[in-house]
Image (cartoon, rainbow, N blue to C red):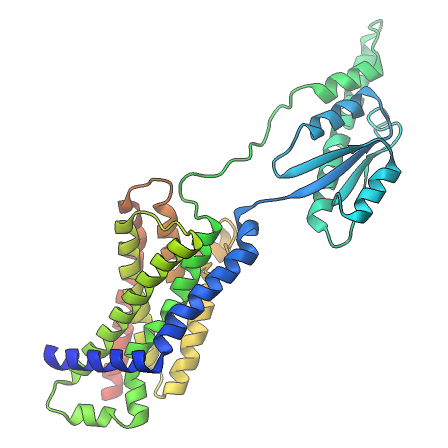
Length: 384
C-alpha cells in the first residue's frame, strides 16, 4: 500500500510543479498580498499615529497658558504647534502644515460655559477627533476649576483669586495617567500578523491540491483506472493525503522563511513555529478532506473550499484583528483554526518559550481529528 501511495504522491507533485499552480496559489499570491497589506496597513495595525495639531490660545490666562505649554511638551505620535493668532493657524491648516487646530477662545479656563472649538478638514477624521479630545480634556479641567471656586466661596473670609486657582488646577498632576507602551509578549507586530494571516488562509487552498485531487481524478476519468489497479483503495486516499501534507508543509516553510527575510516578519522560536505549522497543515488537510467528502463534483468542491477558506479566514482574524476577543464574535472566532494559529504565534512572542504554542497546536489537532472523522464517516456512507 505504501508503495502505491508513494507513487501517487510523486505523480501529484510532478503535476503541480509542471502546471505552476502550486507556485502561483501556494507561494506567489500569499507572499504578494502579505507585502502589499503590510505596506498599506502596517502602521495602522501597529497603532502608530502621526498627526500635527495646532493650538491657538486667545484667552492668555494662566489656565490656558499652562494647558498649551503642557501640550507643546510633546505627546505620543502627536506634534503640537502653538500659534499666536487664529489667522496663521488657519493658513497652516490650509497648506497642510497642521491637520487640525484647537482654539481656546477668550474667557476659556475661567468661564466654564466657554468651550474650546476645533478647526479641521473633513477628510482628516483622526486629527479632528484628537483635537476634540484635547478640547474636552481642557473643558473638564475648566469644570473642575469652577467646582473648586464654588467650594472656595463657601469658606467665608478666605480670599481666593480665580485665576490663581485656575492655574493651580491646570498645572496640578492628574489623578491618573495613560502610558503609551507596547506589550512584549502575546503581541504580533503588523508585518508578522499579516504574513501569518495570509499564509494560514491560503494554506486551505494549497492543501486542496492533494485531497481534492480525488475529485479531479474522477472528473478526468483516471480515478476508475486507479481503482481498477491491483492496489488497495485506501492507498489512493493515503497518497492524496500525503500530497496535501507535503505541499502544505513546503509552502508554509517557504512563506515563513520568505516573509522573515524579505518583509522582516518575526515568527518566534523555530520549534514553536514548527509545531503550529505542522498542526495547522494537518487541520487544513482534514477540513478540506471533509469538504471533498461532502460534494461529488470538482467544481462544487472548489467553490465550497473558497467559501470556507475566506469565511473562516475573516472570522478567525486572518485579514485584521477582531477586537479584544470577547462577546459573540470572540466566541465564534475561536471556532476557527485561523484564530488558534495566530493565537499560538502571539503566545511565543517576546522571548516566551516555544512550549507556549502547544495549547494552540493541540486545538489545531482537535480540528483535524474532528474534520477527519467527518470525512471518513461521509466517505463510508457514500460507498453504501
